[in-house]
Length: 340
Image 1 (cartoon, rainbow, N blue to C red):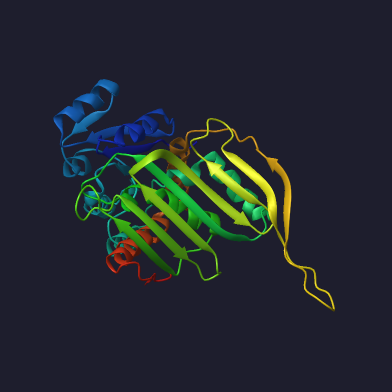
Image 2 (cartoon, one colour):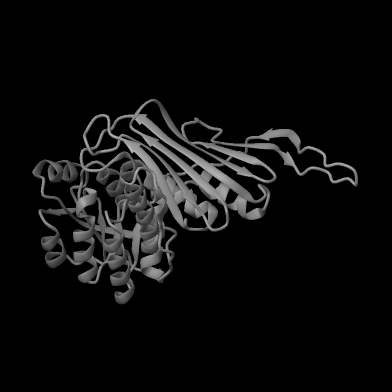
């Protein structure tokens, strides 16, 4: 049996409590210390995990405590700085999404982790969602046919951010899912967005991702919408599939619908025929995705495997986010993405 992975954590703000809970309950982890500048955050943490030490800085965590790995749950603008400190100290690194706020910084962290033989994993937790895993297997089995296009919606009324637009805040989940399901990175992006609440911070964004295979993905995100929506639709040549994360139980619906190719004749071409079949709602047992994310991080650190959402996956997502920003500034003009 492998020894427990000694872990520290930086940040106990918005998402930090969820990460801390999963670190604490994982029996393969020895949760050693939390670093947070906020006295109130440290007090909240200590009340929940009195057996775990606390300190005020990353520097103190790295120099004063014996850890193998560090989880980062700080605000996104400091992900790069903290992750670089962790990797340069020779520690494995787990980072809340997005990995960084620029592809140049993300690439630097990826290369740094690879040079030191360290695991760098991003918390793209929806890739680990039981239903997303089921959908990926369904696509790979060929039952859906060839994927033609995919459109996604992540909408709500709030929470309005001041330091990042709605695409950076909400879309990392959808971008990571799209790239995972299609097993392909986009060649270009075009996008439009509008700032209605805070000048320069887009509250709503419509983005189109184009792929070399001819596939297309549309992503619509907004925190200024009357509906709470977490949904996507995949159109394949054999079937069509809808995933609705807000549905209480039947999150996946498969429609046996499509368009058959026209029959050829010596005298005329028939029109395409619409096909209507059964509707299926497969049962998929659900588990907490973050628990699976943390478990895979431990395995990657201990067994030198590559996690599903490794640093390069994080880099690909940041490249798309960055290209969307550039396209918005160019009034929707396509922006090419450098291929890995």
